[in-house]
Structures are given as structure tokens and as C-alpha cells.
Amino acid sequence: MQNELALRIVGDMKSVLNYYQLDKLKETLIDHLSEVQITVTRNHEDTAVIMDNNTNLMEIFLSSKRVEGCSDRTIGYYQAIITRLLSRVRIPVREISTDHIRSYLAEYKDETNCSGTTIDNVRRIFSSFFSWLEDEDYIIKSPVRRIHKVKSRVLVKETFSDENLVMLKDHCKNIRDLALIEFLISTGVRVGEIVKLKRSDIDFENRSCIVLGKGNRQREVYFDAKAKIHLEQYLKSRHDKADGLFVSTRAPYGNLSISGVELIVRNIGKISNIPNVHPHKFRRTLATMAIDKDMPIEQVQKLLGHVKIETTMHYAMVSQNNVKMSHRKYIG
Image (cartoon, rainbow, N blue to C red):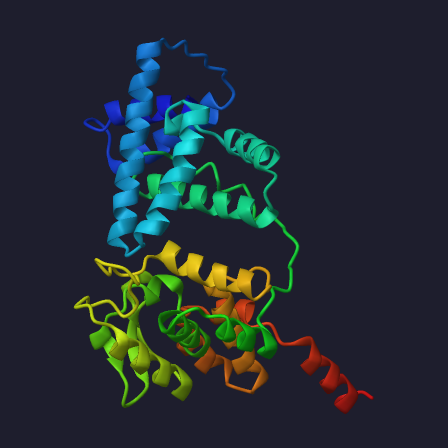
């Protein structure tokens, strides 16, 4: 409330003070009002107006994220997380304090029993939202600034073994699923990238294709001879006129969705008796295999479409067998 009152006073003085004077006035008001307890009584109508205003600000923020190139899936996740906060706090965003955010995160963790990584993801979304509000002058200072990164255990994430990959391919029930698995294994593309691919995107001669990744960034990826053979067989077996590279097996043969691809690989994993089978695991496996075979990390970064090389290092977990062999070779 103190921040909101300070902003109102500064706004009323814009016509008589210059920028420097307004800035000094704002600093002085925040300093002195921080020592004052202000209580506001609101009725039901006031609360409804507050929620509408908060929702409008959130929608403007989400629009800015769309302009930046965020996917619909990411936008939906941002919206769900921010909406939950605003529905719980139910005060103007200008009045949301660091204590409000901390209390909410603590309650969220207790209610959902989620990991530290999930809590930090929620914190990062709040940081993005309130930093945007600050940059756009809707608030004076982001309340998330003083909330640091949530510590969590660093777990070695699983990858597929060679045996796992063979079993997954052996348990594909049709040519489409086999082509899909082979494509995931050899390209390491994101599931959101594979569902956007069209038949015309595939360059069979060079065994490559252009995918549209995060932030609307294009990059070229490559597939091996096995994937080429199974892709050609799959496309020749199709009698539909759909443009999509991977489509449903029944009319009207629509493009596979992200959830559709996830369901296919999960079911193949169940039949193969392999736990935790999902599209992203193929991506992590490719990165690990590339690193283990001495592919330069910069090239792995390019292959995966990462902006930061630290992200590539997070995905590429060097296998324990290689560590063991190196220990025996160099240390004894």
C-alpha cells in the first residue's frame, strides 16, 4: 500500500515538478512511508475491480512474451502460475511485497509437495512478471529481487542405454512409430519442434531438415541412415494428403500434437518395460552420446539449439563408465 500511495502522489505532482524532482520525491516518500502502517478496508466491489486490474496487467505481460517469441505452451504455463498467485493474494500488484511472495512460495511447496526445482521455476516466472511491471513503471520495485534462487539437489538425469534404444525400436507397433523413434534418437529435437515439421522440410539427400526452435530461432538438424530409411518407408506407406511429417494413423490424419507424441513414446516404453520414457530423454541421450564420443561441446550446443553453453552442459551428463575408464587410465 505504501508503494501505491507513493506512486499516486508522484503522479499528481508530474505537472509541477521536473523528472529529477519527481525521482527525489519518490525516494523520499518510499523512505518515510515504509515506517508507517497503512490499513485499507475494501468491500466486495473493490476486490472485483482489483482482480480485473491485476488480470489486465497479466494479459499485457503475456502479450509481451508472445511478441518475444514464447510458445503457446509457455504462455499457458506463465498464465496458470501468475493467476494462482493473484487469486490467492487478491490485492493490487503494486501492494504485493516480498513477504507476500515468500509466504506464497512456502504455502505452494507445502500444498503441492513439489521439488525445489519446481519452486524455483515458479520464482523465476514471478521475477519475470514483476521485473516487467517495474520496467513498464507499473510498480516502483520488483518484490522478487530479494528472493534468491531456490537451492535443489543436482540429480544425474537418466539417459537411454543402447539396449533401451534397441528394445524401444523393437516394440514399435507400426512404421510411423518406428520412424518417429529413429528420428528422435538421431536428431535430438524438442517435441515442440518435431510436431511443426512438414514433409517438405525433409532433405533426404543431405539427411537434414530445418526446425523452428525456441524464440522462433531456426537451425539445421541431421539424422542418420537408419532414420532416413524408416522415414522414407513411412512416407511411402501414407495415402493421406496431410502436410505434416508425423500424423495420426486415422482420418482426418491431423498432425501429431505434443501430447500425442508424448503418449506414443510413453506407451512404447510401457510395452518395452522401460520406465520414464518421454521425448526429452532422447534429446538428453543424444547430447550425452555426443560428448562421450568427443564431439566438441560448441558443436553439441549448435546441434541442440542452445543459446547458452551452460544449458548444453546441463543436458550432457558424461557416463559413469567413461569416468571409471578414465580413472583407471590416468590415475590407476
